[in-house]
Length: 50
Image (cartoon, rainbow, N blue to C red; front, top):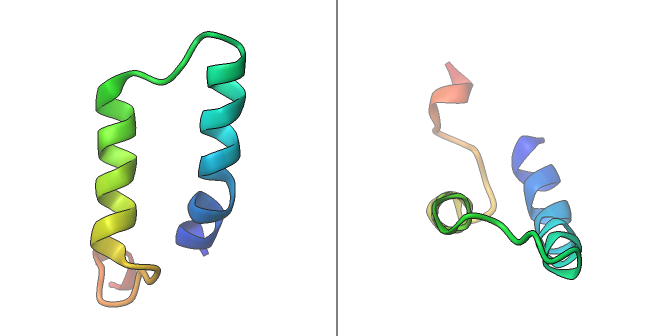
């Protein structure tokens, strides 16, 4: 469920912040990009399953 929320709203979140000239710190963007890349659309077999 968290993965779907992040995937569904992350692009709009970035665009909104960029439009407001605030942007997102590079480390935040890198962490979210890594999260999305590593999880590949599924939280299965992650720590949250335990």
